[in-house]
Image (cartoon, rainbow over all chains, first blue to last red; front, side):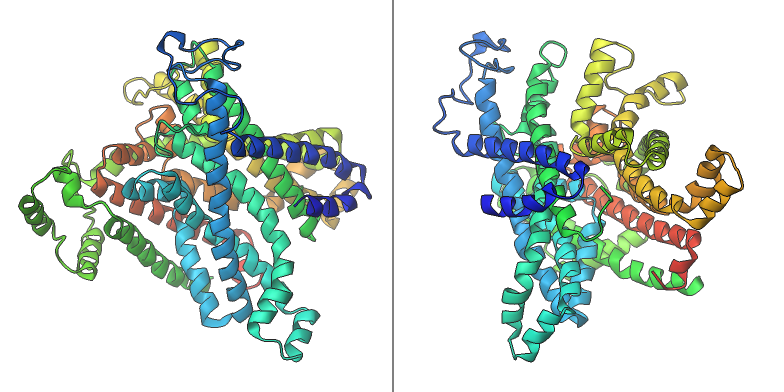
Length: 289
Length: 316
């Protein structure tokens, strides 16, 4: 991953001053994502308090030596909840787009490579899925199958499939016409070999860029669901549910909403920034940004 | 033009059927038996069996789908087993609220987005342009519930200018009614303007490089006249599409915003039907929202064809 970033970063340095400015921000974003992921992974071993222990006497305590970021409405340590919240938000945020990349990306490649009836069917069924406003479908399905991290991840993952399919199909369609694919076919390569050895490495980068944007969107949707109390079930904390809980004490302790809100905003912004930089690099049509 | 409409319409029908099928399957195949929801988890098995028979849940699934679809085509979307209200009544009652919110939100988004886009396109590449494009990009990372909280904190908690939540019908208190729409509409507009601005800005930059703009400049027309009369209309095609799609999305109500600001619209109806596990209302509203979204996209396609002759002649 790191090696890949460096490899992509070098052409940015060269041509225009404006792109270079994007470069510093890009690295800030990468660092912030690293911090968030490290916090989420190491939540169990970090010297922080339990995210679920309640201290009814010390409710909404101000930040201090004992609680670095204070406590929430039930006297739980805000920092610990933030760190464990990062875990939930990032697990859902990263795993759901993986479902999308694997199924949507695969389906898109097959549709773009084989064309014909299969493509028509795949595109048509994705259009049906796209007909539902995503949040509505996510809410409806979780209402039936119940709230849990696993269910949430699956639902959001399935919702991402159409978008990934479009990206990978579009990339495959143009690549299939290229000389190296024609050459491979002329050499007698099997369909599987052409798909995996010739097309996949080329579709990978646009998909990766889109994957990062997918992570950003998924974190937002998960946050929205948890904010409504329809995402991750309590007492587990997610940034969205923390913002929702903090909203009840907006008059007296606005920081309970604002701290997780800032964490969420920065994370989403970082994923957007990194994803968009990669997308701009893989997209031959420059200048829109 | 007529063949174009007919072709798009023929595509619309299978999509609508598939949407209804998917809505039905979500409600039928996923775990969570309607009879148990109505009677409670501890219900006796023979009572559950009797209710399942009354509701037709013991019939084959294709038969249930067809009869459900048949009822819907006659305008019968079902009836809530909690409140006794029909889905249609509930939707019709709340539609005006979602509609009002949608109009204010789109207007506010366009009022913020269009002037900024024009200013950025004229000074494209300048510090102002870079700052605004960067700002728009940042705003895309701000979900509606975050901007809602920030706006409530600023205008309701700190300044006490506007009500934080609540709803007053227009017939009772027109001013109060408008006041409760300010913050929700502004929240949605904060999410809309970056998209609208980015789209219009890039189209406008392309338009400003056309020969006829040079011609207009050479004729000595005033800059604002060139921008507003000559450049804006040809640049606004994508803007119309995006606005149309947003409207289609908001017909289904803005789930989050309506819930936060306690506006009794379609989105709030959907969320409250989930909280109360009112599955009939949920199913009906999801179908209504999805069908509305599909039909609105169809209308946008038509509009697009009206604005751009290349599309209705089958190119592009």
